Length: 126
Image (cartoon, rainbow, N blue to C red):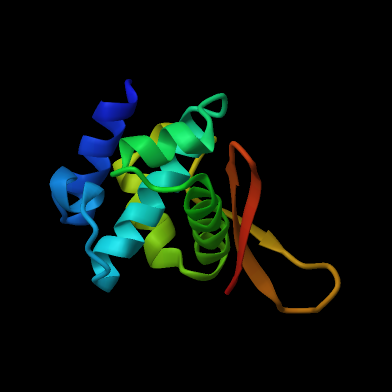
């Protein structure tokens, strides 16, 4: 899979166009989709520089790309809907399955969902 294919697949899955991802639009759903694209590119191509990712997405600065990656990483831990949407669009970025049920030994009766991504575990309390 190339970076262009990943952007195209993700745009289709998130309900936006590639042109919208590369645009200057600040509409929430477009900006969040663009942030997800930054995260996906960074995860799928770890050797690609943040400046290269920014160039692919409309000439964004590397600091904007870093912010987007950090923001989506946090959102994935908090927002299971986003996690499932990205998992459905790009299952190869997640290893081995979307959810594994674990129970905390620290708090009786507390459960959480965890998924292993390329950058580490993503945990969401249930």
